[in-house]
Image (cartoon, rainbow, N blue to C red; front, side):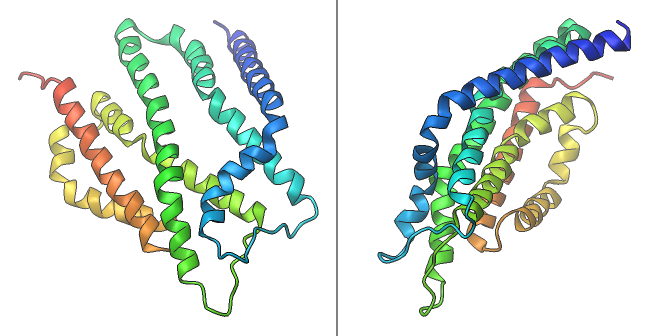
Length: 236
């Protein structure tokens, strides 16, 4: 196909993605305050009895729930978004590549959702409790709703992407970029790298660093184990 036809087809898929996100957003926007309440429940549960969340900007009361609703709309539409990307890429793939791509696509969706759920139900509570516990006695913690939203979204994206490590590891081995033996030999360096990356991308506390570094290492081992099962060594 000429490049112009590729661009036209790409535009068609992008329009479908935008429409899907818009429809979900419009369906959820009436529940934007409830969505923010659900997001802020872990923080509110850890705040002292006489503390509340605050809005330091006049527009935060409106914009923070709306931003969260847009994020949730993209989150819910992610399978459809990936399907549209797959529909655009699939015609250029060989049958063997398609057989590999479909399980990879499905597992990527499941792992991303699992990572976000892990961040919300396990990591977020521990991190918030750590920060509030170590607050000085003469300081009353009152978090701005926009700041809390940005903090939470960053945490969710970091864990969602981190949980893709098994897929990335498997793809690197399937593509022949690295081998299972090479990764196994470099395991000690990879573990150190997991802790280094988690120290950079997580908030400055040991709890979130450990809660990211340890799953990163375990997910790498999972990807390596799957590669040993699925990738047959080539005979000389």
